[in-house]
Length: 113
Length: 112
Image (tube, rainbow over all chains, first blue to last red; front, side, top):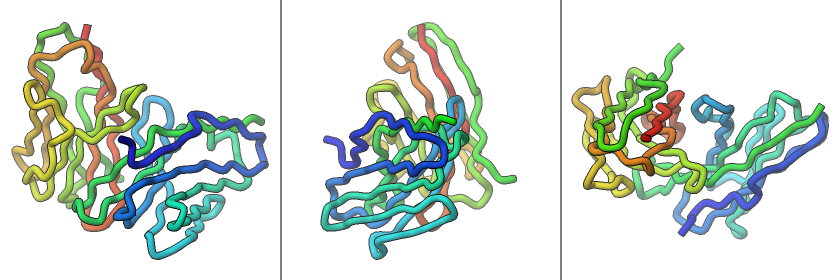
């Protein structure tokens, strides 16, 4: 049973437009959420995070929104650039599990010039 | 430039052989994770350690997989005997107190 779901396996966006990646979760005990980006043949790299006490966190072109009542978070990238093309993983931390992260299956973003 | 270091980067082995993957966490990080990435399951947690003590290895097939931390600078993941279904990318990650963990570049395992 997947606790963190990324329902879109892929997303294609035009350069300069907004990319919106979505993530849903089922466990209300999750207290911290992260997004990782992964290029082929490399390990995932940390991108941005948000605590469950917030509803928005922004870092440059990247903004993460959290809707706790809907158990939904999203990552907005604006403007999108071709170098953003990668697989994006949503992850959630269970506050009671001492740091274990549970990952979604990822969404492959393609930004076309 | 602190990073998690994994060896080997690539390994092709025959079914039944023993495979050992090694990880050097970032200096000062006290939590070490082993994840496996497959097409079907995405990133799944196999085991993790805090201060070298195993906290959770419920994601690991116990009959053939074992994970250890002989010291604070080395974590190992061993598969014996290996099977074709073990073919995947194995990632090690480490973290300090807090929430962000940092991944190595992965060990690409192919069992034929």
